Image 1 (cartoon, one colour):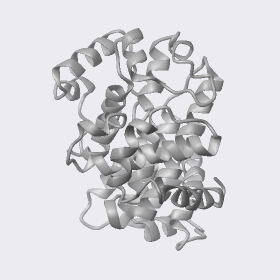
Image 2 (cartoon, rainbow, N blue to C red):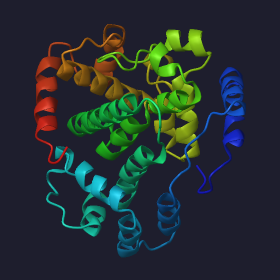
Image 3 (tube, rainbow, N blue to C red):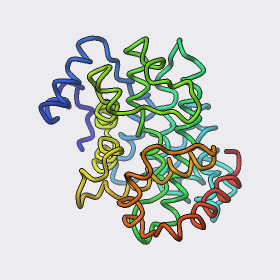
Image 4 (tube, helix red, strand yellow):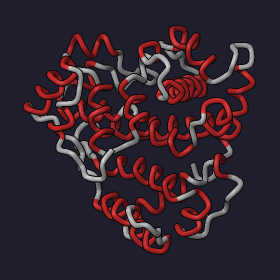
Length: 297
């Protein structure tokens, strides 16, 4: 993608006709796409330079104390255990990598870019869920990197953004939370129910946000198709969707709640990650043990 942020309506023009008409209608009736924080624009400008200055990048990140604190928490995940402990943002940039750190910063920035005055409990629960799935996705990617070539920073970015369309629809429709039963533990959005009641799709809305925030194309596509891996085919986003869906399954297992979509997805998710159903319980135990041991998370 280009380094210049395209307008939302310009992005919508590139969508499939059915998706474009739905999103255009939502935008015309008040759907608000969260603006990117200034820190991301400043970091992008610095990253365009032929020679990267890690000190300048660190200085920009440090301007935002909340973002800085959360970045230290995220790299406390055991995916980065070989580099810990980190004493400064410069150390993180050197050890994790500039592009990889930027991906983590993008994910963290989304958490602070939207605020919902109503349904505060659901809003807070949403972010607890998103961060947990993001962290689990990081660990799955770390464990299966040789198979799927997805890295922890990319998996975390997808994990945080994958359901962001839900947040925007909560803002747009006052009755969305109640209709989707989002206050009930273990219950999440059912796509057919969402389409029937609101004539929209949180995956398409999330895809728009991801494109507007200039996420990598394959992550945008994974967000668009994260409920329908069977529609992707041999696409590089397929492994990312598999990671997301296994992260969601492990999240539900940790809560001891059934994942309603898992039986219909596992036949495509597990082979994509080089796992069998017989090997899955041991793999889940490994991921949850690392998840429980992640520092500060």
